[in-house]
Image 1: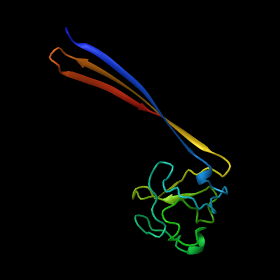
Image 2 (image 1 turned 180 degrees about the horizontal axis):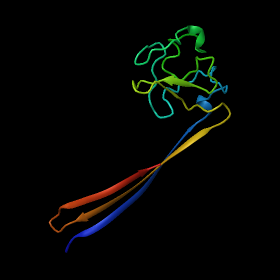
Image 3 (image 1 turned 90 degrees about the vertical axis):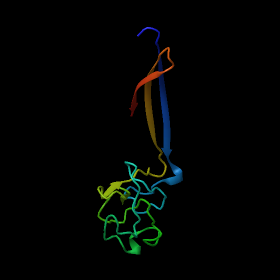
Image 4 (image 1 turned 60 degrees about the vertical axis):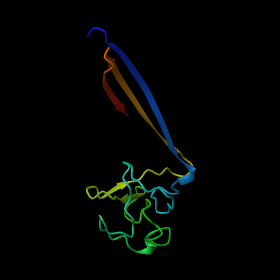
Length: 140
């Protein structure tokens, strides 16, 4: 189109997040973990252990938690199941997803994630002052 200008904007965004000594798991099985992580590996909030909603469960006895009680365990990631040896987990607040693992590094190790986003926008300006935007976003 005559008289129109095209301008392309491309931007890269990086976000780095690390978990480490401030909130770490002292054992592989997670039974001694008393940290404050309360979201699962996919980012879902944890259901409180004292709650039976949206998921009912049988982990209701105080001695099952390193905090000393079900109430003290709050909605933090824990491993009250003495048959599970793969780390901390929780029931989720999502009624469609019963439970998921939590990401808590072993003490003495750090675990880092990098989220990268790239977006590109093409802007076409017309002599009349109107504009048209077309873009894409990629996140890894």
